[in-house]
Image (cartoon, rainbow, N blue to C red; front, side, top):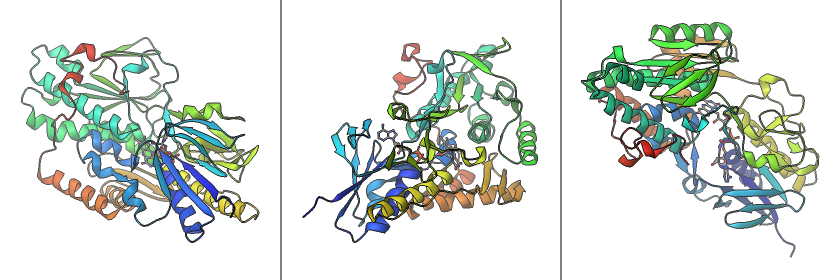
Length: 432
Ligand SMILES: Cc1cc2nc3c(=O)[nH]c(=O)nc-3n(C[C@H](O)[C@H](O)[C@H](O)COP(=O)(O)OP(=O)(O)OC[C@H]3O[C@@H](n4cnc5c(N)ncnc54)[C@H](O)[C@@H]3O)c2cc1C
């Protein structure tokens, strides 16, 4: 009997998970094929709801689904391991659990924050993982607890100035969530803090926020955020971050409690070791069939890939793109196994949904534009439907409902020794 064909998928994110489910559908009854999913986390993370973890709107575990739960009776295998190297010529993946051979490989290892080489990046809080969201939430709560008793008004103001760098959809959603937390929950519950002490600052290096969103909706979003008391500053490029300070290219220094970095991402550094062309963000340039030019059995998807000569709006780093690419990569793997010709990938972006906090959003879906409360209901409905698993959908729906009846849970989860105000030696912000 010949050895089974080994199909290996790296990363259990939007792309990797969809790819493995598609391979499962195609090879469900084929004993000649082995399907293996490898990822360092044993769960799938629904990133669009990360900003709501930061604002204590929903509970961290409610936006992740364990791979074992997703797998249930399916036959694919899951290995929780860290990928440490890719040797495409030998068809081997190096992992913390040893070397893995493959016949076909789909790479969906996502991205990491891009600090563009600014000085003091280690003092910024990135927001790309569940752990980072929880750590950031706890640091914000540390600041509130300290500010509540701080007699010096200048110091209190500095601690309560929360700076978000990056005016893309993530930065906008984060600052809007922080506004909800501070205005609806903190002011009534922390007696030593009044809204006069609070400042929410969104810094964007380019002249516009929400680039890529319909300009009228982007302008409306900007107006709404400003009406809500958020200070939006465009053409404000951050050049350096120090504990408690952010410096702009203009030379201005801003005193701040913390700096949240949402200004850019780049592909997983593991991709640097791959042969072939990469774009500025480190994404591998793939053929229209989504495989690496010299490796027809190695596919890259989602935040890891950019299709050669694709228009800019088809190269955005969003979940629908990763999912669509995963389906095509999996189909091409199936075609490769069956010795059929590959199909090409085409993407039609459907639009953009951006939450502006409680009761407000802007939506542009297939030319259909909406803003305000209805848009917010639509945003909620779409995100609830896209969550993986009925249990998680119920949990998030309950979190949202309970938040209208009860105060947000502001207990600090991680160890007190990590508080940088109680223990300045706790050091840099970035969780390692
Ligand atoms: C805060 C935030 C909000 C966002 N909001 C939206 C939104 O509203 N709408 C939208 O469309 N997109 C949104 N995105 C973008 C979206 O999450 C990404 O475009 C999408 O996740 C890309 O999918 P992917 O499969 O390429 O990577 P990911 O989903 O990031 O998956 C990568 C996987 O690889 C694993 N991995 C990484 N390195 C290793 C390693 N060395 N070893 C083993 N496993 C590894 C990770 O644990 C993860 O499971 C948001 C992203 C963030 C961070």
